[in-house]
View 1 (cartoon, one colour):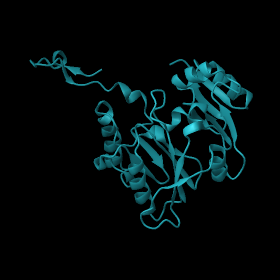
View 2 (cartoon, rainbow, N blue to C red):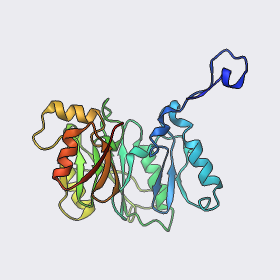
View 3 (cartoon, rainbow, N blue to C red):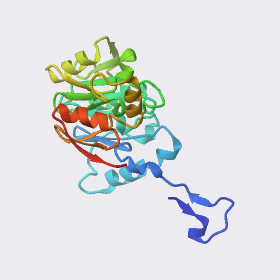
View 4 (cartoon, one colour):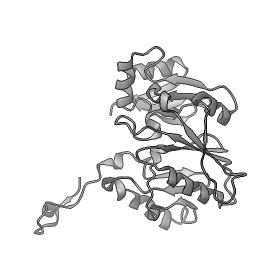
Length: 254
């Protein structure tokens, strides 16, 4: 909630001495676990940039974590946030190119990962996330729920595109190469089987239902194990569609 001049008993021109950090609630954004290391992020907007102080402190000082490789450091000051960073399998890291994460940042991340001989990733896939008001990170329109099941919002189908980084044959500084596969083809190339695609609000949903549940983070589920997810209770149609597809949803009100 911030610290005010009244809390400190001092005189100041402004009531707030330390601004609040209301977005600490979204703990996946300041850093991400990537392979044997971490990415500690530079947040797009000033209101969130102090949040990474906590993860930087922990990974710089905790005796069990201090030797963890950093594949991204907020001192690099190129925007990336955790809602865009996902591991689909041992070979593939998927990152959204969004309002909050730049393609140039992913290129730098690819170079840093490539430089570490212990990393097993063979590929980084950068997926376009349109800069629309109801889409912020990749997790607001595409989420992996199970080993072969994916929830997506159809509103971005017409502008779907992605870039590949080859970490095996791409040299010391892998560069993004745009690929023309559709979403289903991309996912099949990652998991080596036909994916099950579940549209937000279910099959044959109205445009209003799709827009409403997309707006209320209808794809933003946390998979706590394959096929078991935590998500908002308010997205009733999407929760029903997931249950029908064999996904166990643990809803909460928030």
